[in-house]
Image (cartoon, rainbow, N blue to C red; front, side):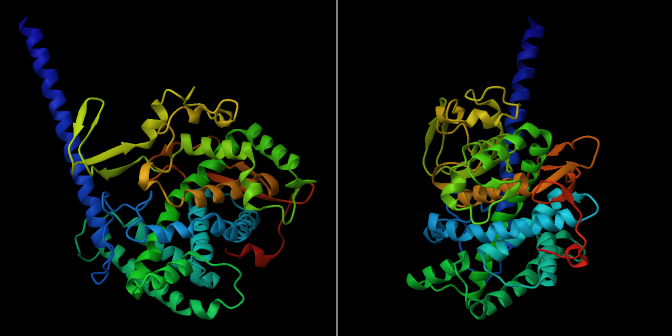
Length: 436
């Protein structure tokens, strides 16, 4: 009897310790997000932290008081205009990857691709290749030191991050001021155009500092998660050759791929979105490898969940990965099975919140349509104009912090293909030295 009482007390003590640890972890996490919001912004910027959030802009947190403005940035019309520009950036990138005689680090190069897409497509910046490389290195330094403790001393990550931020903002200000001069002959409206025009129309003209802050938010929101998902997509196509071949078959049957070559002018938004198997592949990649583990919210009112009352003002963390892994609607959750999203099976249709790679509710990611379009176009280009193989003996283990990525970055050798799907070797030194 004595031992049973001791076991009960021990169990209660362990439970209490776990609860206290979780509470402390959540409190520390919240403070880190608060520090990130304040530490990475200039004191003159008056953009508030989003109400009901913790200021972490990877999933939907760029939606401060400019929510409706950003909604225009990712509208159907906007995506239609972005499509050929995104495709061009992807094609240029794959040519560079194929011309490299050595295997590439896919995750690192996917980060570069995401950054280039954000600057050239979303923001409409026209910068030289050398400037682009410099901006990418500066932004990478900024991101690497983003969550440093806010101790402003020499040689600290915080100091390096602040210096990178200042250098980045200086370059962005230069690009913004030169933007009107680069708009002649431009055939589409980019996100920065919409941001500036909408703020002026609503009598809320943004200062240069606010424009720079919003620009960095847009780049950041499109950077890490898109690179993570792109890397996961390539890894799964390598792991599952039948999936890649089925993608090619769908492209051939729909007239996108002819004699081993992607048909010019075939890609339009509606036609790309009509590729059902491609849609299944993208969804399955995001189910198994959701770039972000979860998100944080603040309870705006008291509510009850499974008999537990959550008071107004409490911080709440939800897990995307645990939701995907434990949801009863998905069968064989560890298996990569795009067919689970087919019309015949439709495992994701059995409930509202079983599948949420982009979050859910009113703060679902505004850029999810753009991110999905980017992944679709990347998959089409990979299936239609590339051959690639793993450059290591085994696939690397997966790291989940801060976003999902392979431990070695995923080493892959890309080859150029001619119209008959035969390997070709790029001979131009200019191509070998090119940068997107």
